[in-house]
Length: 215
Ligand SMILES: [Zn+2]
Image (cartoon, rainbow, N blue to C red; front, side, top):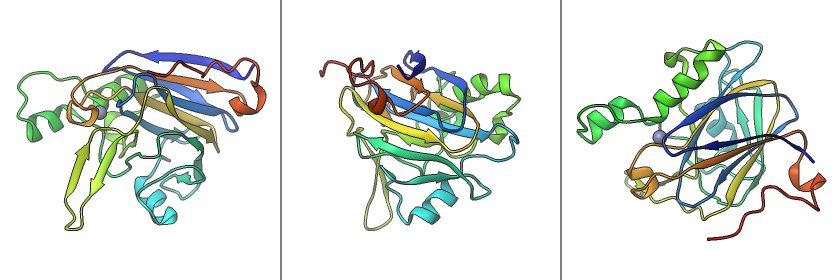
């Protein structure tokens, strides 16, 4: 049994947790078409953070998947993507924030957001909202057209799809179930997060807690 912690994120919520080097984080889309924003900071020095720019630079692609390394702003590996059943994620766009909704969508009043949920859940680790960088938007389907225009399409993820990451250093981690209508095909769904002490498939052949019935 590799499962150390299981967190069920209700729609439009988030969580913060510590992930140690060598542990595995599994982000699961239990119902399909639901984005989950991920960010992380080095446990030993919070001014080292997960960098979209460095990661895309070294991967030579904006479409990150199995085998790719996710780098920090100091060009050190933070994560390795070891499995990916969805195949499409975004690392270009920022986490949705209160201003995302007021500026782009003209929303009046409070709207839940990944930025707020990350800030709330990372505060316990001493991380200020201004430190939250561009997130890895797991399951987010952003298409870049030939003319450079960016189009947000419904996630390609189906019920039970997951992204499995191995931590390459001790990390402070924030994860959400995204709050933006446009990113999630109009409805808000939960996200399941699992923390494993080792690769779940390699040590759980009999009792794989990640298995879920398909939709
Ligand atoms: Zn969001």
